[in-house]
Length: 237
Image (cartoon, rainbow, N blue to C red; front, top):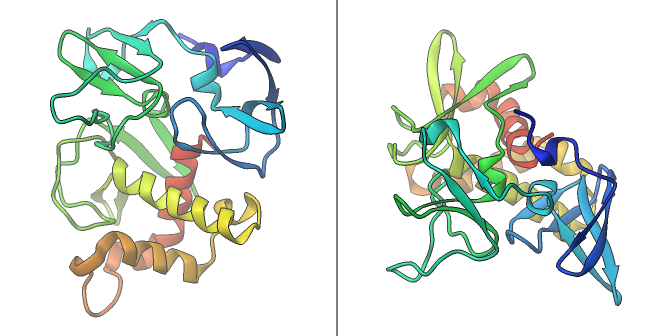
């Protein structure tokens, strides 16, 4: 089934605002719906001098949806997450806090960021395939931690499966987004991060678990591809 945001209209009315679909490739923004970073294509308006921006998947939403990784569960679109027992609602795809627009399943108390709900099942980057999985079944190739509670993307290196936590891919994309935003270089740096930026981002992810002799075999061989894939997955490139 084609989702509404996959073929969005040129203009919409959202929360009393007239928003236009913008295809600019190199614009960084923070979505005013889900509060997550964004890049490129979006709905926007200049509201009294203040920009209002929405991811396409946050602007053109489904009232309800079902996701293949959650079987027959039905998720309802909400403009804010329902109250949580620990005061924070976590996305059941990435494990990060959901503080804005969310898809909520009341039956099993599950939540999804709209961006996570719309992630592609498969991404190809530099001829390498990255497939979405419901959870990692081995230590993450980016952070080296063994946390299989949330989604991951799987690729192969020399015939061996490598899992990448969705949370780590989001953090990698966010670090690149923040760097490009702070340096005011536009979106080009997000798509083509430098080798120094890649190493810095991977060190940030690994922290004290990083090996003393530098990147492991996986990271050394396809670090650039992994970072580019993370950016492509998260920002829908």
